Image (cartoon, rainbow, N blue to C red; front, side):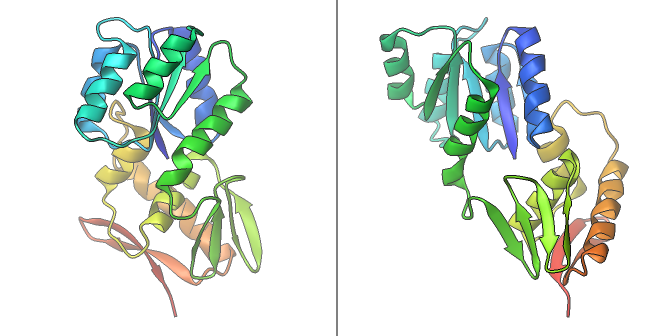
Amino acid sequence: MKLLFAEDERSLSRAITHILEKNCYSVDAVYDGQAALDYLENGDYDGIILDIMMPKVDGITVLRELRSKGNPVPVLMLTAKSEIDDRVLGLDTGANDYLTKPFDTKELLARIRAMTRGNRAVDATLNYGNITLNRTNFELSSPTGSFRLANKEYQMMELLMANAGQLISSDQFLEKIWGLDSNVESSVVWVYISYLRKKLTALNAKVSIRAVRNAGYVLEETK
């Protein structure tokens, strides 16, 4: 799951980004409202964490422009302001939720899960063939066992299972999981695909990840 995090306090941004990545989110972090708008033009996000008080363009303006374009992506407003009027303005402009600094990271994670839940056909798990991916504890399991997937492994498996039977290109993996600013080579996708294939084999999975030459990868059921 990919998030855009717009927060101008860089030390806080780094700390929260680290926590989000440890919880298997892919994060694009930006530090002003104009950068947030630029990223929203080019990126496909499952959720946005948006500070109100930012340089260049404030968070409310970013949110207003986002909603004026009909973009329904869920937004959590994150701000030091605690006045009722500010919260009402954010919610009336189209925010899904509101969290005031300072906050507990467990509450932040819970609010992110709650606001993005409506975007998923299956809330807690994804199922395909004889395997299950648990979105809460990041475990990939079959009737014969389970593995807790690492961050990038989990995100790739989630993308494959959410789009089972559909071709996903290396560029799509890179953009969705490593982010717009990433300089990693496309070969890293193959490396993680190989990790996942080994785990599927160990689980006696009745699914496989098929490579389509010069096109991408498809998760398919096997006989």
